[in-house]
Image 1 (cartoon, one colour):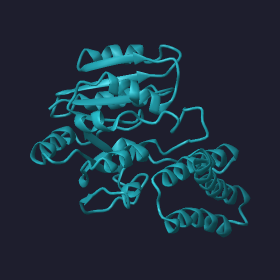
Image 2: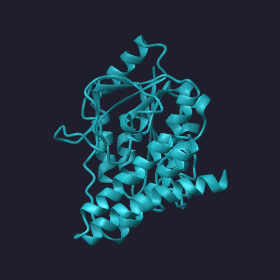
Image 3: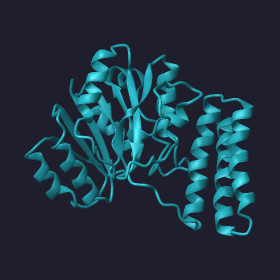
Image 4: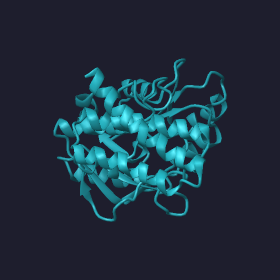
Length: 283
């Protein structure tokens, strides 16, 4: 089995170098790295040339940015049996990770993919409250069991599900600042693909610090629009949608004496509402 690791990147250099350096330590070396470079300059040329001496790297330059768009470019060039989408600031700290995933999918022939836990350098959960027990993904739990950096899927799933929705996600130049990976997985689940969460397997990612300023408030709104779009598209229940709105509104109420923090939560709530309504208007 060959892995295709599609690494879409912009701005970062040392983090990409770190990821590639650690990939050289993987016990299982049957993989290709497809670096989809969205930088307008040549900042990655030297480090990629260095690592190309040690591993199979395709360096693909694109002029138009966008995370989903870049991943689609990478998928079109992938030749592996298992495809993953590492972030440009993540790393595989477990030197046996790819071998473990390969063995798991070799045994579980009916599995179309798996999701792994995401932790920081200290072993602390990143992004989600990752459960400690294995679970099969479904519509009810997919938001809690996968991030784009965490899933590894067979090529057959990618062939059947198709491309990422390029209007969703960071850099898409739309109001939808998130939702691309969940939309992708929900399409896979709707096509009866079998994806499983395995907590014993981990990838690494730094903790994401949270500021409370105008940029952060707009980001919360934009991410909320993406989330609202996805839950409307896949017809989640009224109760589920209400819960998604009430939670950030509660956060705003609890932080009334901290206007910027309250604004962050309000931005998230209004973004979710806007995303749901926008989908219904355009549907």
